[in-house]
Image: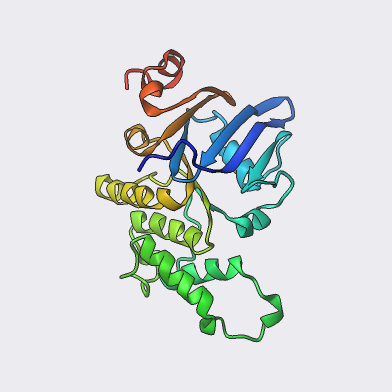
Amino acid sequence: MKPETNAPVLLRGRDITRRWGGLVAVDRVSIELTRGSVHAVIGTNGAGKSTLINILSGEIPPSGGSVELLGQDVTRWAQPRRARAGLGRSYQRNTIYPSFTVFENCRLAAQARTQQAWRWWSDAQRCEASTAAARDAAARAGLDELLERPAGLLSHGQKRQLEIAMCLATAPEVLLLDEPLAGMGAEETERMLALLDQLRADHAILLVEHDMDAVFRIADRITVMVNGSVIASDVPAAIRTHPQVLTAYLGDH
């Protein structure tokens, strides 16, 4: 489902810049994520993609520019506060708890969304809200038949699905996904693309990915970065033939 032209902007970065001493890792990058769309960011290693997603998620502050989440200026907000406000994030490396079951991983994520420190005496297993959120998130990610399986015994693709399920358990409106297809075989890639296609209707999704075939299949818009700067941002058909992109990145793709 392609996004409507009047779809609301859920996450906006304006002139985002990040300097590390004399190195400019991200140079005045602006980006908008709208509900109902997948916005892919591509570029070679060192292009600034991970730094950009880290700034948007609140892991590192920008040297300049601003970030808005659901209409609020969150530039100085830390990552946990942004997460509670509706932003979910996955990483290049698995961040699951391998000794816990699929359900327990999802429930922990759900509990983090609605922390109730004053109820420290309560049994977490009796929290109906987090239990329901965990089960729903696992089902949406296609893991409802694996709830009691230890996460460490999942296949690589299933672990990536679990990471997204853990994001969903926090009830996000924006998903920042950092290379969710890395290391996947053809069948696992198809499952993940089907999941992203399903999720796009209710979310704004930022996808950082190196699998160009997958990017051109799933993305509604593609931003191309080189040396920290954006050289093109357009619909996939235009990116395929963009002269600078062809020279800098896609080659004969």
